[in-house]
Each structure stands twice: as structure tokens, then as C-alpha cells.
Length: 211
Image (cartoon, rainbow, N blue to C red; front, side, top):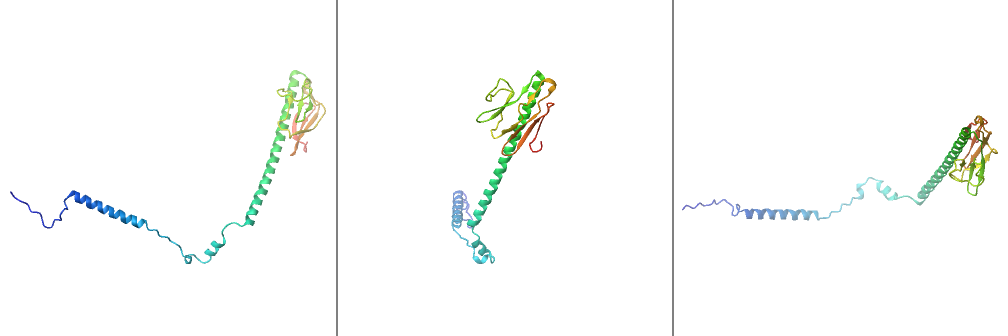
């Protein structure tokens, strides 16, 4: 039986897997403790006032915000612009409503003219007024009020548009598509429009200042 002697240069326990793993684990723990110790140090860097160019610190101390006078001036300008924009929008809205109502009256008169010519009857216009609104009526059976659902009755969508002037009893005749010449003037706070009826049954729309 032969015995093999180990080399005297071999380190005891180097070839043992258990000791190798224990050594690696202890090395990892030591490195982790070192990293946490470095990260836990709180360092506060405070710049020195000598690091800034001259005049920067003076501006930083002087410019801290808006003054009360500046804030009041900005608020006043915003209010003025808002008021002017609101007034312009309301004027535009009133002009649009007036123009739409005048266009609707023109279409209504064209319908009456075509109906009179088609059925060879006379369509005579008159105005009925109530406490809230007015209407144009071309039906002899409707003496008062402004009933809805009748194509011979026109009632405006907006009460702000008023009928300021109308020729007495303008009429469309069924014979040869003629009419009793006249005009209807609609107005509101923004402007006024006229619907003109010629003796040949022509219906046109124009501004009151240009007619």
C-alpha cells in the first residue's frame, strides 16, 4: 500500500468546496457593507457666494416676484380686454340673429307668392302681436294669436328681433304672379334689415340703410 504525500506548498482547505463558498460569501458581505457605509454619508454642498459673478446675487435678492401695482395693472388689462371681447361677441350674435330672421321672412314671402300662383288665390299679410312676440299671418281663419304648425303663419325665433315697420296689407295675387308692392323692416339693437316686395312679385333682402 503506497501513500501519496501532499505538496508542502498547498494551502490547507483550498480544494474544499465548502470553504471556498464560505470565503466568497464573506467577501460579498464585506463589499456590501462598504457600499452602504459610503452611500449613507450625507454630504451637503453649499455654494459659496464667491462662486457667482458680481451683480448676480444682487439681482437674485432684488427680483423676488411681482409687486402689487404690477398685479393690479395686469388684472385691469385682462378685465378691459374681456369686456371688449364680450361686447363684440354680443353685437355679432345680434347681427346674426337679425340676418337669419330677415332671411326666414324672405323665404316665407316666397312661399306665399308661389302658393298664391299655384292655387290662383290671394295671400294677404297682416301682423298679430302678443305680449311676448309677433308673427306674420296670411291665413284669414287666424284672427288672433300666433299658432304653431300652420305654414301660413311666421313667428320669429328670437324675441329681440322686432318688426318696426310694414306696408299695410301687402298681398300676393294669384293672377300673373303679381303683388301689392311694399316692404317689411326688421330691427334689433345691432342693425335693421328690409324685405322689399315689388309689384311683379319679386322679393329681395337688403339692409335698411342701403334700400
